[in-house]
Amino acid sequence: MTQNDILLDTLYQSMINYYQKDPARIQHFVKVHSFARLIGRLEGMDEKSLLTLEAAAFVHDIGIKPAEELYGNCDGKKQEELGPGPAREMLEECGFEQTIIDRVAYLVGHHHTYTDIDGMDYQILVEADFLVNLFEGKSPADAVETAYERIFRTKSGKEICRTMFGIESMEIINDSNKNRNPVRRA
Ligand SMILES: [Fe+2]
Image 1 (tube, rainbow, N blue to C red):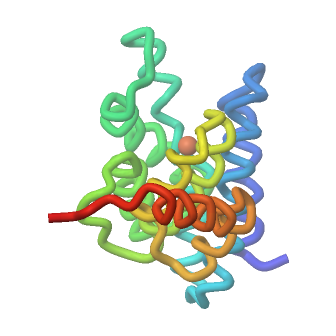
Image 2 (cartoon, rainbow, N blue to C red; image 1 turned 180 degrees about the vertical axis):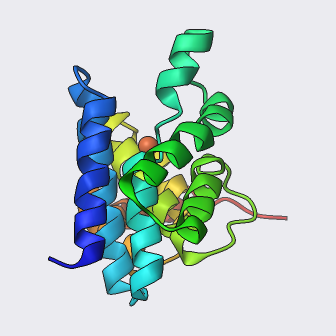
């Protein structure tokens, strides 16, 4: 076990405790973390970036709880507003260093914002969250394809998305539809 493994396991347990009696939220961040870690490793992230990404994946939805308690709902903007505070607190308690805490707090505060993605950690967190949300939200095939085109940028994130949701077969279907009903573009 490395020091980073110990930090991440401590954070993992803290998040299970934070979302106690809410297995859906717990299983959500477990999946997002797992995809984020895989993509981060496949994309060759350095150790510190990977630690930042993995920590962000565990806590990314920490703002849902205060948003629900305060407003009775958890829309993306309120989560972004209310997430960084408790994220900082939890990471400090677990012993993370300050530069990582600052970056994770930024990612928690921006993970529903898809413009100005300013780093691999941010990009991969968004991709991992989409991989899980497209499934959990039972998104139809066209929504998956739109997300694939608009959101996914990393080679491994794209490959996982294509493989899991069968994007290639959708492209073939769309192509054959286009051939059947040719649309002239001005
Ligand atoms: Fe999420």
